[in-house]
Length: 287
Image (cartoon, rainbow, N blue to C red; front, side, top):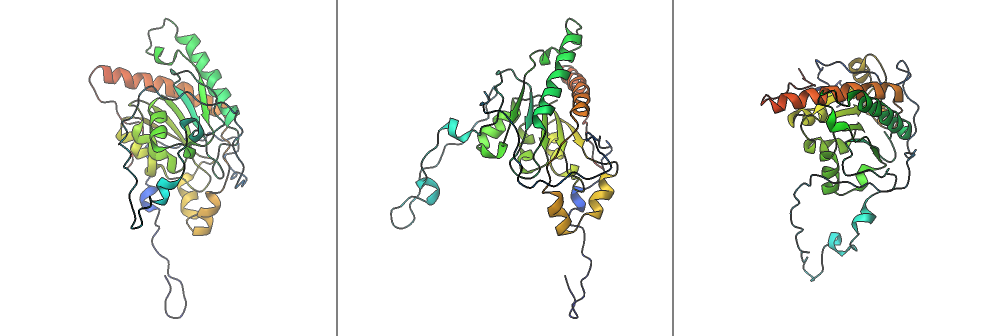
């Protein structure tokens, strides 16, 4: 907003409601925590060309309404488009997984993609296999993760809403960059552990992780720095926000593997609480 003489007035921070401080501090899962990542606006994820087998628990879908006429007996533009098969709608770039797969990395095309997603997936698989080996016969509640298979989605936004919701509901560990696809946290199973990866200067844990908390999931954050809230406050201008949203993300695979071991244990503890009839305390509690 500007005055009559052209001077600009400082307005309120429109992101203030999304940057409320969390009682659970962010964990830095990036190799260079002191410097912002390099900008890569259109770098695509490097994934394989297989297709995922998604779907254990299906989410009910509403019936598709019939095409409606618009005065000349023509269907709307939406319904004039040729129908696509389910295989055509699913994007390429997914590691084939078994129906019992519980761990996944969701990527995206263009900005805020996980540029090292294959390395992250390999580290997750290795970490979970170590958990698998150490928990055999231990009675520690980790048998839910005995089938280790990490699948990677190259572009979750290329799927239909039903496919996205079904995919999220089938996972127990999820690594996902911050973005609109995170709204699917609403369909996560209780006690699912979710790691949301943020770019430098754009830390908004109060936006989507509250959805995860609402359904009983466990929220974790990854940020390339030690002062996420201060960085976000300093980068509140539209230009800075645009630049922050245009980066590629490269979390340290070793640190993500450490998170996976912790998350498996936390998820198992959460399920034990549920089996005893008590609601597990939320992993993320926002002030």
